[in-house]
Each structure stands twice: as C-alpha cells, then as structure tokens.
Image (tube, rainbow, N blue to C red; front, side, top):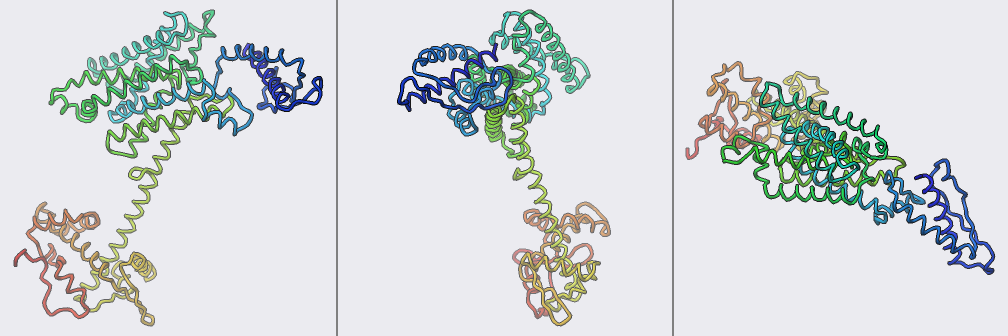
Length: 548
C-alpha cells in the first residue's frame, strides 16, 4: 500500500509541475499541449518507474488539481520509514530542505535528536565519572520487557503505556542489581551482566510473542531494538523534551549533591547527605532518558549515546561543570549529524548514524585533545625527550669544564664525544641541536671545533648539575642512601625538578655547597664567576647562607 501511495503522489506531483509550467508560460492555443519534464531521482523498481515527462491540457487541469488534493491527504496520513525517504530532486535542494525544516518529519527528528543529546550528555557524564558505563548498557536492555508489557496492556503502541512499563522495568533491574550486590559476594560487574542478559532475553521472547499476534507485524516494536528516529511522533518528542528539561533542572538544583556522590561518597555521608536517595534519583532520570531514547536509537545503541559524548568531554576537561556542558553539546551535535546524514542517505537508519557521529567526535578528541589527546601526548613526549638530550649534552659540557678547573670557555667536540662515550659525528650532531635551541655556538678553528655555551646555555647547564647534586645529597642525608647508590636516581629526577621543589630542598639541606662526593653544587656567585673568561683567583664557595 505504501508503494501504491508513493506511486500516486509522484504521478500527481509531476502532473502538477506540468500544470504550473503551463500557467506561468501559457501557450498560444488553449488546446495546445505544453510539455515540462521533471527529472526523477532514485532508481527504485516497480510502480515508481515513471515516465520522464508528463503533458497536460487546460481542460484536464481541474481533474489533476482534485487528484493532487486527494494524494496530499493520503500522503499526510502515512509516515516515512526513514528520514531519507523524503527525497528531493538534487543534493542542493535536499540540503536547503533539511536546514529550512520544511518537512514535519525532519522537524520532529531533529528536535528529538537535540533533546536526546542534552539528556544523554548530562546524565552520561555522571555515569562515566562514577565508572558505571556498563550500568547504562544494562538499563537500556532491562527496559525491553517493559516495552513489550506496555504494548500488551494497552493493545497498541501507546507511548504513555510503553513509557510507564519500560520505566518500571528499568527501575526493577536497578534494584535487582543493588540487591544482588548487597546480599551476595557477587561483584557489581557480574550482577550487571546477569541482569542485562536475563532482562534482554525476556524482552526478546515477549517481542517474538507480539510478532506472532495478528497485529504484531504492524506494532512497530521492532524499531525499539535499533531505533528509528523518523518514526517519532509529536507525543514522543515532547516526552523526550520533558525528560531533558527535568534532567537540566534537577542537575542544576542538586549539582553539589550529585558531584559529591560521584567522587567521594564517604565525605558526602559525613556531611549528612542522603547519598542513597540522590543515587536512585539519578538512576530514575537515567531510566527516563533510556526509555524515551529507545525509539530514536534503540535498546542496543542507547548506551553508546550515554557513554561516548561524556567520554569525549572527559578527554577535554577536568572540571565537572564544563564536562556536563561539553558532553551535552557533543550529544546534540551527534544527534543532529546523524539525522542530517540519514536525510541524505538512501535506506540509512538514523540511530546507528548518531552513534557513528558521536564515535567520530570521540576519535577527534582522542587524537587532538590538548591535554589527553594521542597526538598531543606524542608531541609532548617528543619535546621532553629532546629537552632531556639537550640537558645531558649541557651537563657533559659542564663536566668537561669542571675537570679542567673552568679554564677556557670552549669545549672541543673530541673531548665532548669522549665524555659522552659517543663518536665525533654524534657529538657534533648534539651540539648542533644546542645551537638550534639557542644555547650554544660552534667555533671553527682549522680542523678543530669547539662548543661555546652562551649565558642561557651555561645557566641551564648549572641548573641541571645543581638539581642532580641536590637530589643526591637529599637521598643520602634524608633517606639514608649510600653515596654510591644515588647517581641513577638523580639522573632521572634532575630533569623534572621544578624551581619550587629546588628551593624547598635548599632550605631543608641548609643551603649546602657540596654533594655527597665532595663536588661543588653550583651557586649563583659561582655561575657569575664561571661566565668570566679569565677565572677569578677566589675559589668557588657554593651556596651562601642569607646575610653571610
């Protein structure tokens, strides 16, 4: 029947196009035919394979107008199976048709996607930080028996009855999980898996039972498995809006309670907060969100819309209030993008496209997040390794100058290579890295090349030596390490000690001047004297006590 109605509608639209063209460009003779060809989009077989052009006369016009009115009545009562069934003539017109929201089915689908994204983003954030991602999956499967029971009680696809039945089933699954966890030694993940499998199996059995009924094939309950946002009714969309509004209000009002319960339950109980009440309130909101989202993305995929946008936001921020906002925005973007792609696709379901869109957003965050992204971490690790190599080269140059009593400013590349246990080419490459970093210069004198540290490079070299020897002294004095066991630890820690930590070590060790091996710990006065080409006759003294 749907194919027949589509056949009638397409025929009448083509005839109407011919009639409108005739009205805008009248022919010289009233009886003369005017031909206007309308290109047909799509390649569907059967009755929809129509002629490429149609013709109409003025005498036939009233008959076609009446036919158009009847066709519009028929088509308006039918609901498209997918958003993509609303096909236009070309890509540009489809694009404009979607963003101008000309079709009611597009408006309902887009509005439902926005409500879905907001509620899933808000509540999914608390699910992710509480490490209850599997709980969302369990709840989405546990509501399936309630959907079937709601249909059996009402006798048809009543949104209110299905909502009540699914909510009760979801709450029953939640209580059952907590009961198993508290009364047995079974872990929470095992109880979640048992409830998920048991309730989902019962739901599938009831669904098959409904399909075997005389009206079962027309029930539309199969859409609750994988979702079909194009089949949303206005009642279902406003129910989704109500749940989204309730989620926003309750999260705003009880934000501090939900926050404490998510990160420190013991502290919340110490403050006298009813943590159990707020936990079940959150689970109730989650059940509402899962139930109203079933029609859009299905029981199999609704948990993905709860977890993926929140996980994407978690990679971008460490603040809960920002995470809630970012997750909601990602949810709305994913839902809208899924509806958009389904509108352009041929026989593409909207729910899986929403999940794919949210997965694409997660991949972008996973690779490009400023703090936790894979690319950012790789770049930071590469920068850190490069800095450590430069600091080791600076330290080797300091050691060479220290061995000869800081006489002479330049360090030959052959001496540096011998100190570092490398070839002359490797040493020269390391010095060139210092030159690129603006810490060193190379002086060529015939066949001899020397590395000369500039003030910035010498200051950094002294800082690395200071960090190394302070940490060695700390381990021997405070941790009772043997002097010959502290070098390896200091080799690592010297590159990560911050100035605040160095100041604390200096005060703790009473501004020392020598390390456990009797070597000088560079001080500011020593640094200033070492920058002078002609060394001062005054011996280095190390750190000085304030006021001395």
